[in-house]
Image (cartoon, rainbow, N blue to C red; front, side, top):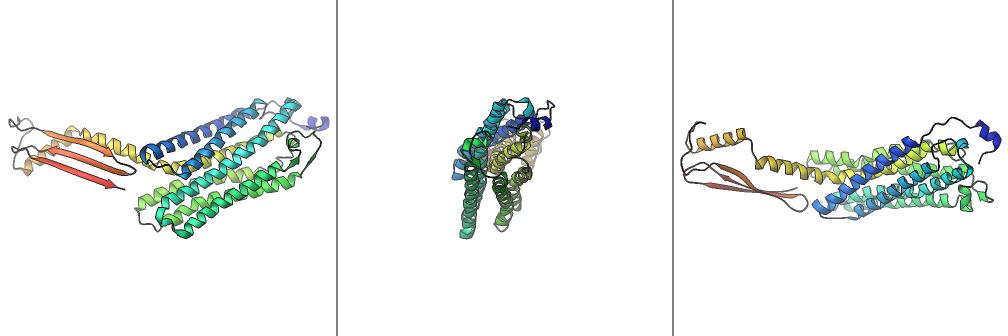
Amino acid sequence: MATSAETMALPTNHSNRAPGFIACSVITSTAALALVSLRTYVRLAIVRKFGIDDYTIHLAMICGIIAVCLNGVQVHYGFGQHAVHLTPQQGIEIRRWNFALRIPILVGSGLSKISISLLLLRLLGNAAGRTRKYFLHGINIFVIMYTLIDIFSDVASCRPLAKVWDLQLPGKCRSPDSIISVVYFQGACASAVSLLLSVLPILFFANLQMARRTKVVLCGLTSLGIFDMICSIVRTALLPGYEKSLDFSYTAIPITLWATLELNFAILAACIPTLRPLFRYFDNSSRAGRSRYPSKQAFNKHDHSTEEAHGHSFRSDQRPIPGVHDQYSLTSVGHGRGDDRSNTSTEFLRNPGGIVKTTDVRIIV
């Protein structure tokens, strides 16, 4: 803790950053959890295939839940308030739980990037090729390496480790500059990987044989990791003075918030591209509903065109011929596994012979 002379120089106002901090943490974590849940539904109920990239993003979401809980614990002890208004024990607890927060943030962010890389491999499929597969797996190994380096650096920062949060304990710590240099390294690596995973889809999907609209959508959705990169850059830029601050409980709010946002935006970026089958599913369902109950104007137009085709001319006020029925119905609309969709329609045309026209359309995307 600070000495009495140092404490006199600290701000004495009663401003509190905690409400905004915890609100942003909870909102973005809730959004991330919602998208992970939707992704799970898509993969299990619609696509019916659960891959390693899905397991990876679930582990990242667990880290996100732990992170927002640890943020709540810090706020409970006074995180967001000036140090002069807190007891020495509160300051120790804030530093303790802020240090613990680093582990789920680092692990969750790394797992999110690995999930995006594995997603690209799944989307490319057989078109990935050996070079692209090795490159993406190389990115995964690189993410694991720099994450472990940062974690080991944090754990080895002080002996005993408790001196990280209780500065009055006897022991020895590495210099703050050496600790921050490792964090700079991790931030630079994380930003570079996020940028790389945002650009790679454009390069990978450019030469694939698929509709241009599909290419644009896939590249746009998989490039959302750019927001993760922005959070990583801002977090890294806030590092100077972070460890040396005498008013840690107040000044550490921005960097902790941006670290939390980095994790949640990484999860969002990994989940949004996988929700495309869900949008397509609801779009097809709405179209099927409109086809099942066509408008009266469309119904009359269909009758008129059918009558002309058979050489009949009926006025709208003319009674139908006995024994001839007006029917137009979509008998079934089924959705197959994955993106396979089949529609079967049966039309009863107005004519004395009672001709039945059945059309079976099967679309595989």
